[in-house]
Structure formats: C-alpha cells, structure tokens
Amino acid sequence: MESMQKKYAPNSICFGCGPANTSGLQINSFDSENGLVCDWMPQSHHEAFPGILNGGIIGSILDCHCNWTAAIYIMRGLGLDHPLCTVTANYKINLLKPTPSNTQVRLVSEVTKLDKYKANIKASLYCLDKETATCEGLFVAVKEGHPAYHRWS
Image (cartoon, rainbow, N blue to C red; front, side, top):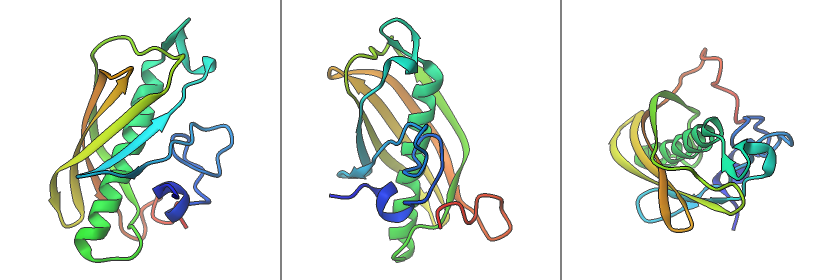
C-alpha cells in the first residue's frame, strides 16, 4: 500500500513528510477509520538527550501528519481525485511525557470538523501503547498565489 505522501506528492521536499527530502523525516500516513495513521521510527540524531525524542521533532511529525489528514478529508469532502495543497493555520502540541527514541512511534489523527476548505484535526503520538503527545490544529487549503500552492506537484 502506498502512503498518502508517496501517492499524491512524491516530489515534495517538506522536512517532515516529503518523500523527495532524503534528509527529512519522511513520515508515511495511511488511511484509518476517521483520519490517518503513521508508524515512524526515530533515529538517534532525533534525540533531545540520550534515549528521548526531541520535542521539535514530535511537533514536526504531528504537524505534517495532521496536515495530510486535512488534505485527504478536504479532497474527499469536495469530491476531488487529488488533494488541494493545505497548510497549517495553527496547531498546539502537548508533550505529556518523555517519548523514547529507541522504538517505533505511532501517530493517530482524526477530523473533528470539516468545513469545505478547512479542517480541524486532532492527533496523538503513541509509544509502546502509551500516549506521549497530542496535537490539535486548523489546516486550510491554499489558493493559487500562495507560496505553498504548487509544493506537491
């Protein structure tokens, strides 16, 4: 099965989710019940200190995963066959407990509100079946003229 990123934006250079960014995090998000899911393996250079994942990296993977959730659900809501380019309008990360960096993490997102070109998304990061961080945000489709408009083409 192909991830949303590889299917719809194989040339994207986004640090968090761009398949074409060999120095990036390259998350891969897949369909789930009311959102997307992503399993991702941190590396030691993603650490804040030995054994613990950096909070900025956590924010980046949650931001990108939520953005893709919005893009896919806006696409489906509008009956399109390709997602519109979406960007983060705002997001809030809560770091609930230290996230180990030596094991796979799971991102789980869901749509809480869909309004044509906008989507409110909430997500959680799990490590060893424990929720270690949460995210809530608003993600919007951009129009031609916005600097990110063609970033997925």
